[in-house]
Structures are given as C-alpha cells and as structure tokens.
Image (tube, rainbow, N blue to C red; front, side, top):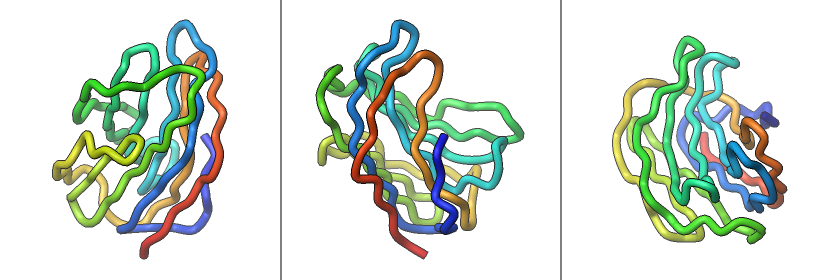
Length: 132
C-alpha cells in the first residue's frame, strides 16, 4: 500500500485504476483514516468478482461492511472515490454511488493511500485527496 502522509479526518480520496491481471484477485482500492497497519478503512473494486466492497481493518483483522455488485471491467480505467465525514461513508465507482452508509469503527485523522492485494496487477493514476 502507498500512502500520503497528510492526515485527513473528513474529506475524500480518489484514484483512477486499471485492473490488469490476477487469478486470485484483480482489484484496486483506496484506504483512509489509516492509523497504522492494523487500523484503517478500505474500499475496493474487483474485476474478477464484479463488485465494490467496503471493509474496516481493526486490530489487524479485516471485516466486510458491505459488498455491492458493480461493473468493473478488466483492462479498462475506472475511477474509485470515497467521501467520508464522521460516520458517513459513500463509495462511488465511475461517478455512480454504490455504497452509502454509516460506520463507527474508525474515527479521527489518518493517512490516505492506494491499496491492492494478493496477485492483483493494477495500474494507478491521478490519486487525489482533500479534507480536514
């Protein structure tokens, strides 16, 4: 995971990503409110599963908050954006909102960054964030 060192409590994080290869996973995502390697949020889009997912990682254990079916084509550029304020989290893929909920697992400022896992080969571009 690559992260920005500017802590953000409430705001947004956005990245363009292209899922290129992977047999186990073909995904790209973002993290925010990253406190350390054991505590942060993740939103990701997976071309193999055709979904957008939201997770929280606390005390080193990742927990699913919500999965939503979404068209995530491999070898195509997509834009993943997360907007977060207090407990409210919105996840958008290519400008369409797929997740809108409240979650109270992680609050306060933390780093933001891009995320992938397993055997995913993913290109990232135009990473941006903002907030306070």
